[in-house]
Length: 285
Length: 183
Image (cartoon, rainbow over all chains, first blue to last red; front, side):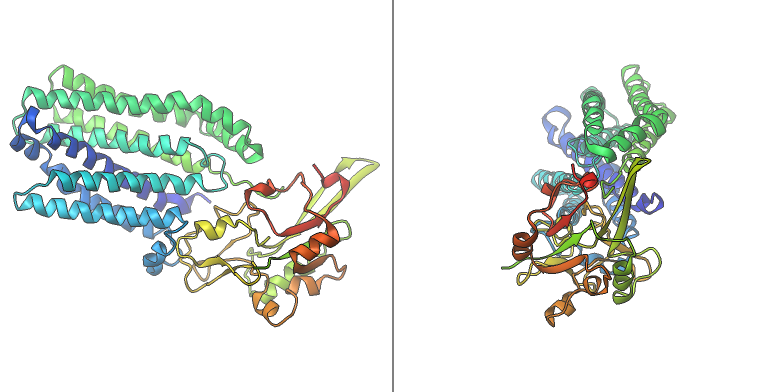
C-alpha cells in the first residue's frame, strides 16, 4: 500500500515548501520601511528564483501517483465538488502568479500586489490539499489535524528555507533583517507548538473513531511511536540551531544553517511519512 | 429522478460467490479485482455459533463520496435511475474514489492504470435486464429495482455491526440480516 504514496508525499512536501518560503519572502519584501527595498529584494532573490522550479518538481512527482499520467490535465474536470480538482487549479495558479512576479522582478518591477495575490492562491492550494485528505474515509486524515499538519509544514518549511537562504545570501544584512529572521524562527517554532498542543486531542479523537481510528491511533503511538518523537525532536532542534546561530551572531557559519535546514527537512519528511502510514480506511467488517 | 438499488437477503445467502464470479466475468476483472465482493462473518461459542455472508457491490449511494471527490468527473450519478456509473475513458487512476468509498468498492485496475467500479450493469439495465449478480444467484438472494418499491417490500436498511455508518453516504441497499449481524 505504502510504496504508491511516495509521489504524494513528495508533492505535498514540495508544494508546502514552495508556498511557505514564497510567503515568508513576500513578507520580507513588504517590510521595506524597516529594511529598505533594495536589501529586501536582494536577500530574497535566490529564494524567489527557486520557488518555481520546486513547484515544477512537485508537479512531476504528483504525476507519478496517477495510473494514467497522460490524463493529468483532466484532473481539473470537477471543480464543483472535488477538492483534488481545486488543489490542481490553485497549484497551477500559484505557479502562474510566481512566474508573473518573477518576470516582473527580472525587469526590475517587482510587484508587491502580485506577490500577495500569489500568496493567497498558494494558501488556497494548501487548503484544498488538506481538504482532499479530510474528505476521505480515513479517520487519521478526516480530522482538523490535517490542516494543522499541512499548514504546519508550510510555515515550518517556509520559515527555515527563507531564513537559511536569506542568511546565506551574499548581501550585507542590517540589524533589522536579522531581527526579522529571529521573528521567523519564533513563528516556525510556534507552528510546531500549535501542532503539539493539538496532538493529544487528535489522538484521543482517533481512539473514539471506530476500528480504523483505533488502528490509526495504535500505529501513531506504537508502530510509529519512536519515529513520531524523533520527528518532532528533529524539527525543533533545527529551529534550535537557527535560534542559536542568529542570537549568538554566528551568521558566517554556513554549515550550521545547512544543518538546521537538513534537520527540519528530515523532521517534516518523517512526519509526513507517518501521516500517510496512519491512513487506515474504514470499511466492511 | 428515480433511484435504483439492491436488496440482499443475507439470511438465505449461502456464500457461494456466484454473484462475485458473474460480476468478474461481465466486467473482465483480473485477479484481486472485485467490483462485487462476498464478505463472510462468523462468531459465537459452541454450540451457539452463527455465520452469515454479505454480498456487496456498489451501493449507488444517494450521496456518493466517490463521485463528489472524483477530480475528472469520470464517476457520476445517472439522473435517470441514480446509478453511480463511471466513464472509464476520463479516469486518470488517481484512486481518489478508493479513498472515498466507505464500502471499499472502487478497485484499481492495474493493467489499465485506471480505477473501476460496479455500475449496476447499467448497459443491461438500459435493456430492461437485471445486473448479472442478480440473475446468477442460485438462492435468488439479490434483487435489483426501484429503491422505493424495494423499501415498501422489505423496509429500511437496518444498522449492521460490520457496515460503516449509513449516514456517511446514504447507500441504496436494503439487507435482510441475521439477528447476530444487527447493531
